[in-house]
Length: 197
Ligand SMILES: [Zn+2]
Image 1 (cartoon, rainbow, N blue to C red):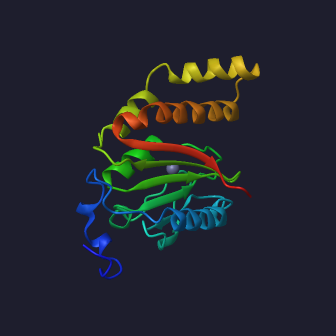
Image 2: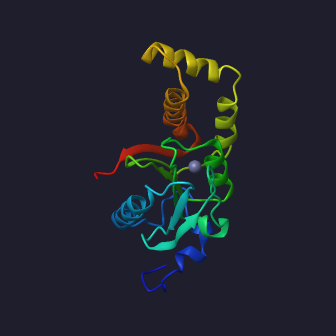
């Protein structure tokens, strides 16, 4: 397989991607540039979530995807092996269990969330074997009977009070800490960052 392949050829052979040998390169620089531009352009949209799908070559596949108030479902045939980023206009910079489950089910390469303050989180496939139960296990953790009590307790300890916005902030940390500590055990890579505004 050489460089004479026509544009788009790689995307037509999704089975070649992530076979554990990293055989298909990603244009990291171009992808990062495109993601930054589109994430900054959509992060301040209010009322509903917004999304963009970017190919591994850094070209936009679909922009301006409009979601619901607290959810978004991009066309799954476009998500496959590609990068899907979306906004959480409520400011919570964490992947929901629904985000992770849909990402794995649809066979995406990377799923991202961006918030109005410019922060983002990313979950992507690693080069090795994947354990696809990541989403379900995350959901089990999220639905654990003690998690809400734990969050209230942590906000009380940290801030001396516990209202909805502090609890959301704490829930965001709990979810991110969990992915941070567990994603690699399933063959995925989790990162957090912030765009320079
Ligand atoms: Zn989401």
